[in-house]
Length: 273
Ligand SMILES: Clc1cnc2c(Nc3ccc(N4CCOCC4)cc3)nc(-c3cccnc3)cn12
View 1 (cartoon, helix red, strand yellow):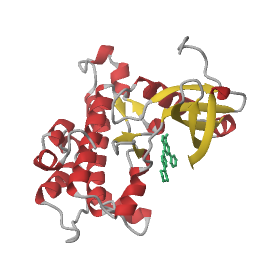
View 2 (tube, rainbow, N blue to C red):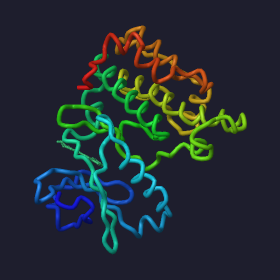
View 3 (cartoon, rainbow, N blue to C red):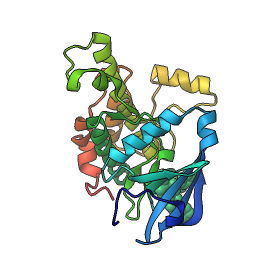
């Protein structure tokens, strides 16, 4: 407040109930005492970080998320550390995890599913513009704010796209074909995931689910996609899913084309609620 660059301290916060635990630590709801602002405090143990040698990954998550500012991306307000822990000060998502909502409702309506997919598409377009590829978009990493607006969280696995970093201010001119190809390939993974999530939001389970990991792998590689007869889903929705779950990453529908797709135009609430 007076000096924004002042280091945050644990004593600046009242810690509330644990919201959940991840592999590297726990997330608590907390309140910054002076401003009474409610946040989520993600506590990560340094020994865990050293043991799994994820220092660089954590630093990358923090650099990336600090620089992202989008209504559908969970804000990272700041961070601090003490002898044994690192603390991330994150935006609190009052309505919790999207996948719990999906489990509760079995599957979403076409309007709800299209609204979430539109929010995700806009958030990913923003991230890609900032050369960030999330690579791990799944219901567990999606949270809902007090208005039910979707927030992408947990950038632990995202990467700053490497090709942009190697070339001089983003020109592709000097990149070898495989580098240009890999750049296009990298970003397109998030488009595939939007297809998976569209299916999962509408049917309640992901399209290539199978008994074993090996079977799921086979189904993905074959793009072994089929639509159950119930719940009944519109042809436009199936059309969008078919245009995203394409093996050739260069043939997947672009984020811009998703925003303009008839199913999205017809069903999504542009305010994202
Ligand atoms: Cl980061 C971050 C920001 N906000 C959250 C959040 N918010 C949140 C709000 C409300 C409820 N409840 C609402 C009433 O019913 C019970 C659940 C849960 C989580 N949860 C987690 C989380 C949850 C589970 C596991 N690992 C992390 C992480 N978060």
